[in-house]
Amino acid sequence: MQHPAPLSHEDDAWLGAGLARAGAALDSTAPILRHLVLQEERAVFGDTVIAHVRGMIDDVARQLAVAQAQAGGAGEGVEPDIDEVAGFASLLSANGAFLAAVHGQALEWQLACRLEQDHGVDMVVAPLVEAAIAAQDGDRSAAAMAALVAQARFCQAQRRMQLPLGELPQDLLRIALVTLHARAQEDAEAQSRAIIAERSLRLRFDAERGRLALLRRLVDTLPDLALALDPLHAGPALFLTALARAMGAPREDAALLTAPSHLARLALVLRAAGLDGDAVRGHVAVFHPEALVPAAVGALSPQDAAERLAHARLGG
Image (tube, helix red, strand yellow):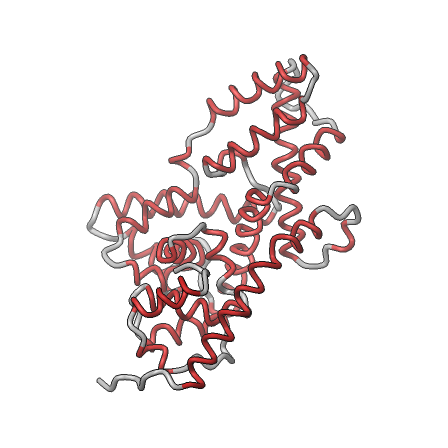
């Protein structure tokens, strides 16, 4: 096996410039996203991702308004107050952590559509999921089946631009419940309804049954994380879950790695995870077929790749 040549000055410059672009993109993502989502005119949301972000936030806001109304004695099919929905949506949109996480889910949906359209990867039953279901390992098979069902729910919800409260991870549910109380402010009756609504929502919530928890559980059963770092084999959901695990970063940060401005960062994260140069270039090419990742990236040790990411303060 021929080993790649050490990094040349040009290769080193390519990595440095790529990491600088990724850093600039990260710095600008949150304020730009917040500005777009908080716009009053929906016509400005020409981009599908922004439309999905706004749709999911509106859906969470609607669920909070319904819970609040039911806490006040309204029936099961109650239509929420429009002003309450708008108020909840405004507060959720202003929360950077919530906005980033919802943005990550919208990016994942876009990625799922791209992989299916361009490469024929089923967004629910990817090859790795299918193999895991058929595995002799009972835990892996059960985890894969549970993840498949959850992924099917996610795809159905995304087509409707919805985000069920039951699918929120624990930290985002906490933000949603804080938002529920924030709308009550000094109104004693509203505060009472918020307490009742929170209790009801918590009783129905099970973090371990949410899609993201099930995907993490399936990744934990795999014999090698590299299996899930192949986007065409793992499919979008498992790929992003494994990428976040490899980075030690939130999943929404992993979703950003498929953007053009993060090309060099994606290559380094994959190399830091132990993938060889050929695998790194092949996986990057899935998202950026015209990109030329220097062959010498494979000459970096995983430790060197991780150090470069750490030095650039971009994770890995």
